[in-house]
Length: 453
Image 1 (tube, rainbow, N blue to C red):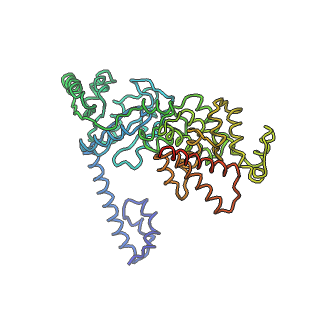
Image 2: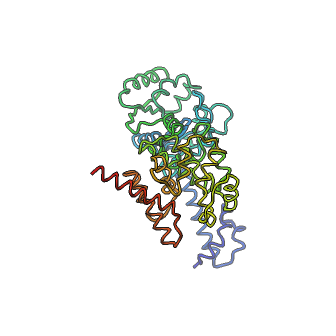
Image 3: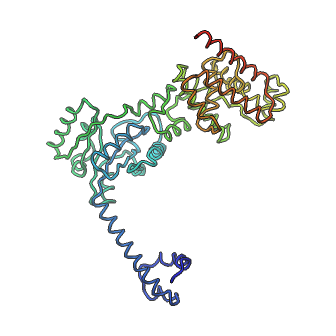
């Protein structure tokens, strides 16, 4: 019997031979020679069968081709692709990211490689859905007919279905080599409910003029567009329900679709912080935007304060030097733990180095660590977002996240109490200003509840 270790030792030799010739076996001693020859023979037969099976699969493969700029990809794209794949029994849907779409100008100034990366991140783990950068290597504009030719050359005999929307269906006659394209593919036209008649008219026109094969599908999923996503980002509105989490992260971390002022501040911040602190700042900004929408607080202010709240997270010696430079009083607590200065110094740096003039934003940065009496909604949101943003991971954080969606004030108080309890457990001294703010907020909340009763 051949031992497994021996078989493993021969693995590399087997990989580079395609026969059981005497020259291959001459270096192997009996009694292993015959057993190894039989094993290798079975191995080559199995490989041949797999190759034949793969070739047959490719010949009968039904592939959906979904082209576009995907600027950015969103939940509507993905939901539609899932439904089309199921309805038409497709083996897969390929999202073809265009380098330079020939039929429209791109908005947002996001390059094709970044759009492809977002699409790939969005589709990771999606069964039968994938993103391709095939068109990115071509110079100039992308033409679907060239892409289809390439896919058919790689998958002889495959059936390709071109997935388009209503507007594209009407415009197909103007596409490059439209007659050739429509002879190579079946078209699946997807529309919103209520426009099926218009879609049917366009399909009939293509059938008569080009002999096109056109199938119609109605989509009733989430009403979202790439334009909507870009507008939400620019206007400091949340996008977590519009795009997959992986896409949301890439958009915010790279300042895609942000207005120029915010994007410049973000790039400056990226250069001044380490990777972990930068990611925390982006997470705080995302969380602050979401909470602002939930509690009717100015989203642009929440975005800016969340982004810059830790702009003064510097080494201890740098904080003390900066405090001296700005004649900022430093007490014994702060000399012992200079990190306690980063909120007050952050407000100064945000004003002097980042050009922030909004006093509400500066105050939210200044009090995001120790809080203060009579906090504004913006103050509360930035304080809370700092503690519950997505990269935070500690016991009880999910409870705080849920509470933040139900009752902002109680979430803030619960967070204050959690910080207080942690300091007590760790045997750390509690700064009087922080404890005074916590007690003051407790009293404010009790009085508010009493008035409601």
